[in-house]
Image 1: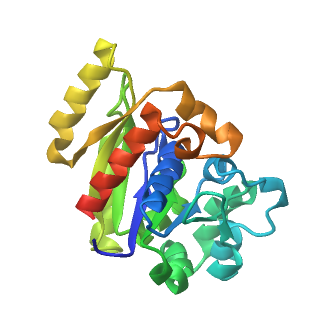
Image 2: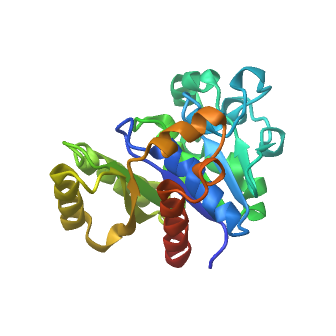
Length: 255
């Protein structure tokens, strides 16, 4: 495996499982002895709270690194999840979208922030906000790869062409190394015709970029973040945990 993969987990649609995937893929990679850093780039901070960190007592977050040039090492927190650290987000990060516009080399801020620590991790997983604004552009500029979660629902592919256009623009102008690592089907329900139709549609659109692993729609996956745990800790032998272990194996093969 090549080390130091920076994976932006991205889809401008909300509610498709970006934070769930960030947390649980990190936990599965960590369980496999890989050192992982999560960068929570979403002002909602779901990856931060989902790993049991109280955002109200976070002293400094990604915002302070991007705007106030606080070093990465002063932002990174350890978590209770094996081999997983996090650079947390708080609501302060919402202001970064506006404040970055006036910054020099604004697209490179995250890449420059991560540079001193990138060699310390096998994987950096960037949980992107549900938009294609400055924060997401920063994520794409800092990433080596993107992973696109797509929910098995009506209009699953809505907006995907805009996302792919953004990826191509960043690749041509800012980050020639950027590639699509894979497309992940989330909230899959094998009992519904709709889920099966979406799988067929997405596989037709993306071909072999679609991971074989599909993430099931389970109550345990939804419950785990409220306990500040990954599903691997909360329900270790359940379907959700096994699906993310399977995804981690696929990511390691592709990486």
